[in-house]
Image (cartoon, rainbow, N blue to C red; front, side):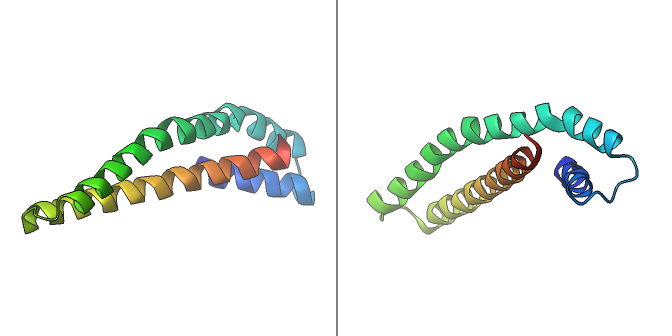
Length: 103
């Protein structure tokens, strides 16, 4: 939601379509700490998440004898980890884009 708001403010500033560019700039400046926080979270969460994903892959590869229900659970964990990775990367991408436009 904040990324959408930042995107709209950045677009209005870039196109000059806002009646009050000062309020848009103030909004962007207010959101800057949030955007920086997104970038920090990207780094802080991706590193341990990569370890979790790597360990899940190793368990599946080196233990083919696991029962089917355990393999299924490993698959669910891998899917959830991949979803988390995508969400984190998308938030960081939006933050970088917004910071690049006005930062």
